Length: 233
Image (cartoon, rainbow, N blue to C red; front, side, top):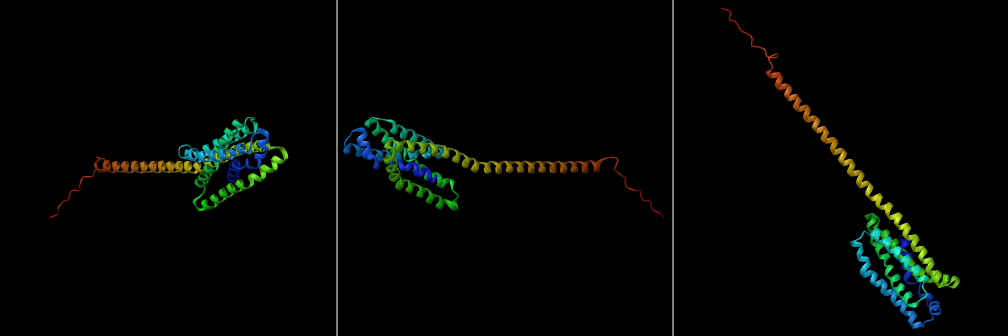
């Protein structure tokens, strides 16, 4: 999960070393190119304000996978467009989808054991910071070798892979957490039914024994008359 956080948060800073190539590709001025940085940060702020609170309404497992899929789609779209207006709009949505790291952080804290919660949060924050620090270097190296669009293609592939991995891992962890509860409830119900059957059997035996005792006292076969005593003078 820490790797997934680093991958999605890195989308916020891929663009900074690529501005020179973006201005040449779209044939725009540097002042217009710098607006892209403002748009991606504005999208991130909108995601923190409107997308992250959805974790209280939608299960965070499902929300995290959906955000990674959305981020993958918009990053692939950013690599394919040739219009600056469309690319600026997509940049805003890239920043909006980059809030997925803030969804995974509370999810990891909820899934961790109380004794290991601090360690888990520390690992998740390490992945977040590593993604922020390494994103510029990775994007600059790939852009120098294969162009700035290759950076977005590689980022889209990484996001799609993380979405698949998160879907499988979170589903397995959810099953592992719910299976012991179901098994313990089944064992409790089986034990209670056994105790109930045992109590019913004991009550039946007790009632039958009382009936046999009552019938034995008043039955004519077992009645014995008192012996007559004679007085010898």
